[in-house]
Length: 320
Image (tube, rainbow, N blue to C red):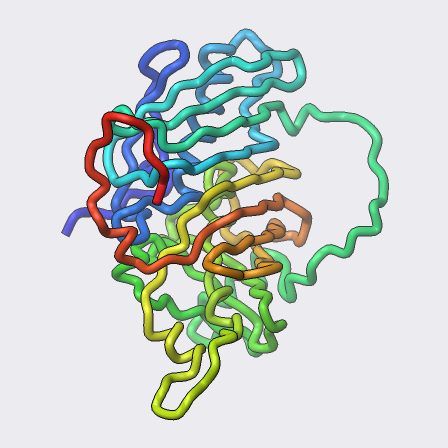
């Protein structure tokens, strides 16, 4: 059995020229045949960070932190080699804006705009917005590590991983939730399955796109008839794919270079209708401080669309 690469290994990029980079999307971070959208975004973010610390190494302090990412996923990617092209939209002393394009087999799969800066060097006014931060239930590395012990923590459970062979990326992480959930909302503490791995800035996008348990807690509106399964039962028995159409992330702080063991995420959807839905995510660090927020527009389709061969196209085509 091939060894599973760490997330940093699987998201690594190599500089080819001053504005082009290469990467290799790993099967270990796929859903079916398609790499997870947050994972793909992370590869693009690593290209952006590499670009600012190499091509624009003269800028001091280095702008290695992405604070804003907005990506449009136009054609599904596959595991394998990708090319990343970076355009300097605006290079500034404090903030820079990059356009990053991910291509595979000559097809433009994902387009993104990324705003880069040095978060540790930011300064300016601080104001109380009276925004109510989600309650993570547990805080602190010492308390969170108890979730991994045989005894666990009373009132908390580890999420199962339905269809894990199809959702291969789900094997890379573990998520724990309170046994008293809010309908339609999932609050998780997440960590990498590999105990040797830490969650670094590069992995924030991946965690934001792992919405474990959200769909399972939604109530189906399908009617129940004699001799028929309930809508919930029909949904649970099927395999679905949730392809990302757009993904936006706002990073509030940087994680330490060595990373952290845990990240909290509160995930909910405002509406699921006609197979299209949104995902709103709030992420906190181990101390309960706001780390990042993200918004996603996605589809809910039969898994057969995922595994159908993409083939080669001579002209641009839609994702689905």
